[in-house]
Image (cartoon, rainbow, N blue to C red; front, side):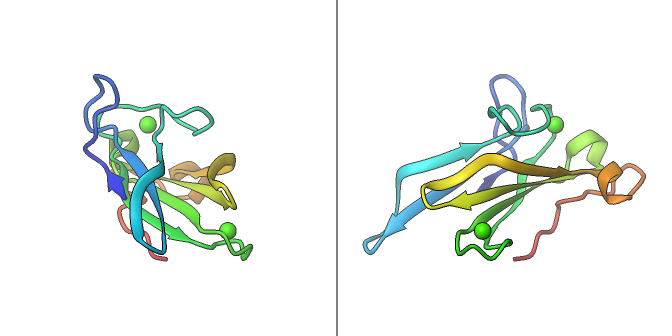
Length: 121
Ligand SMILES: [Ca+2]
Ligand SMILES: [Ca+2]
């Protein structure tokens, strides 16, 4: 789940994304993982109004049977926005091999592009 208005330390609206796990009894907080741009291994830095987690998706993007986490940060860099993609493993989501996309890497220019405001999957 996304919490785009989450403060990271004193940085307001930097945002966070949390992965919850469950079992036959349902979803619980046990083993929950939280990621943000201040998390070790996550590219970027937590800045005011990043809105990391403005959209989230957990879908198997590489076909290995494990859910991969996509996180949009629609407020990044003056609302240009950005996307982070974290791979899923048998033991959870990992920052190993994380990929980040921004206006430069996607060939989108201009402020207010709001990359990551909508994520499907
Ligand atoms: Ca940032
Ligand atoms: Ca996968």
